[in-house]
Image 1 (tube, rainbow, N blue to C red):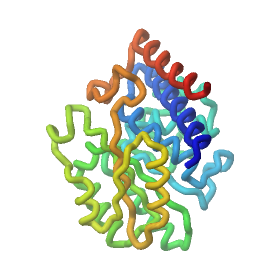
Image 2: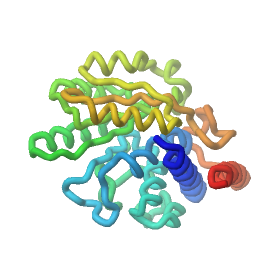
Image 3: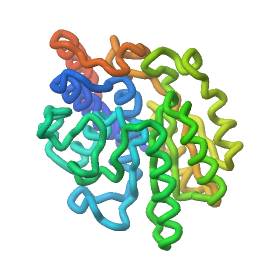
Image 4: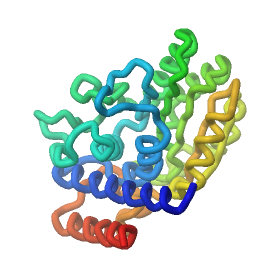
Length: 280
């Protein structure tokens, strides 16, 4: 990846993070920590990786994204808004009763959402079904499913992983956001899913481990997934919960809490300063 492209993606990711904070602050509720940790990957997916058309969100041959960690909808919405699916200003309506941007993604309200998610573990199963459907229909679209590392404590995840490996679904990519924190503490303290890499490999997956905030590594991982035949790919991203906002970073307290007015100003000031530096 050349430096100009990397800079462009970093700028977009910063704007996505600002959209996350804007939405959660205005909603007075939501999940900023895991949204911020996945922001770089979501930026790459929507601006580089996925074959999509915001003007035709129901295009039959589009790539699909199933946000299995559905509580991080603020990251999905911010990426979609900046990609042109709806106005960026609408991010301020997050979780309002009359908004298209509900607390978890809903196909009923927002075109461009490929699956309603929120009950942890179910999204990856839906993604597996979509990938199998593409194979059976002779379609070449790809399916992407971001999961949380706490989410993979759910047994349904491994049923889906077993099936995907057995059916050689090489058009499926799971992205495990390994920020090592969930609502009640570290994933080891709650119910350790480690070793993650070896578990997916045991179910017949190709596995790539990367830094979730390095666009060069992100690009290489998705390219490796496309080059892998006969196996689904799991990309395990080592990430920082709350990435980009100093007082939220690596703090499980920010899994599901909204900033107050003072915290909002601090967070936005930090992100605006980072954006200004990137754009200089």
